[in-house]
Image 1 (cartoon, rainbow, N blue to C red):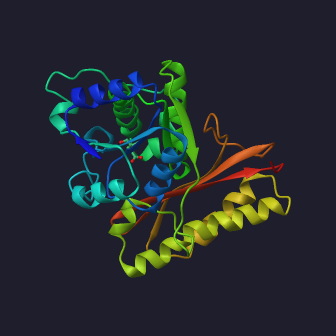
Image 2: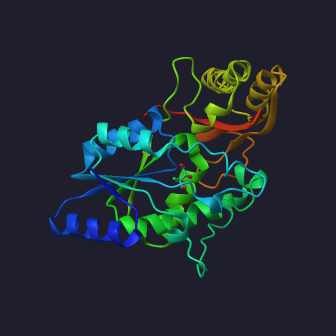
Length: 284
Ligand code: PAF
């Protein structure tokens, strides 16, 4: 497995792979890899000739009072995981190489970026869209793999990829959960044992919402209430949002027709955690 630090080295590597007529599967990450990332790498491995994982804690997607400085960084451990999962290359650039002094271009995916997490994290998705576009330009993948836990991020990247004709096939991957239901996240590392226990209310709320939906409830209000009530019982949880939205536009909906995204974001201790589930009226 090669570890490439300079964008131009990464691009040269990818061009060589393309010349050999091989496909590249790309897994963009900020490191602190967990089983969720591993599942993305495995899917990329199964569907492509070559696999690239990027490890880059992207400063432009963190707000001034967010966790950029303390975001877990464990490159040696992450590189071992990539190697064990048979990645062909890890791209691990320096901030100065991704954002040189004279970097002036940012990507704004309008409307979608101002909903849900975009309300409490202004500028976050501008940073995500910008870095993902840059990574696509550097790595030049055929396919890129993203987890559905970050449903809004995924919707924004899909739209950017389409609007800017980037030509990457975006592959949606199921959220990976701990055995007790907590969605895997690098930020779970911030939780104390007591907070982690309370954080289980997030997936419990989503499962209760699914159960109510399966029992025939289609109005958003009662679905939102069932989730809100479960979260409200936990003293250390501060709800950022509980929402039922159109999966394409991320607009709030009052009644579910075919499908809807039920999404939750909470603050708990030092962590901000998100999770979601897709509600589908018809199966399949
Ligand atoms: O989901 C993440 O880890 C990040 O937002 C991403 C897509 C790697 C961009 O920095």
